[in-house]
Length: 228
Image (cartoon, rainbow, N blue to C red; front, top):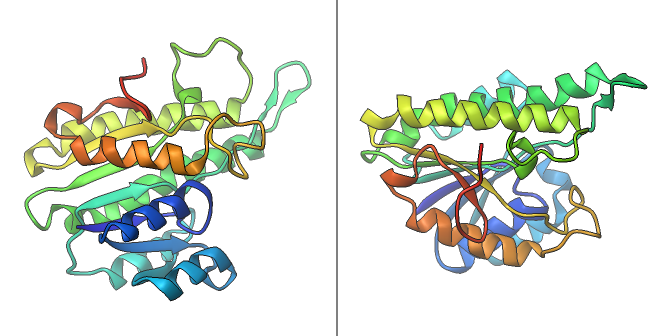
């Protein structure tokens, strides 16, 4: 199986690359600055991993990445690259630069990659597009408020993915979002509940088993669905 993993240089993305290559899958991993991605480079010294430079917020970078994969099939596209800002709050003022930054990467950046690699995913009669989201993008689950930048961007990604699932159905492409849990990464922090290994092991299982019935769903890392 051929996978593309964006943001494969650390955290959840790096764990995806590690586990997928360990079981024998072919992986194209991306990083904004591959030369600085020490852990990914060390892993590539041990395994056959193709590493590309990609900044999903930059259209030219996405287009260049697409040209490098031109004509190649992709079975599973894992859009893992993302950012997290809080975006201020109503009493002290919103930080619209942070809100824009999260939307630029988490929504527009992801859609840029999808658009650029759509023919690759469709090449073998249909593949899977897996967008990493967060439970913080669930409107029904929001019981604490705040985090305007991150919540709004992930809710936007969720809606975009639902539309992709509908619009790409005739191409036999399955598209869905997954919540990886609160994971011990630089983004998740030391107080997070689960390790990257535990999260990704479960996520790979969910991705493997996903079919048409999962297209357009909001899947929990350890089973079940999350309300929109």
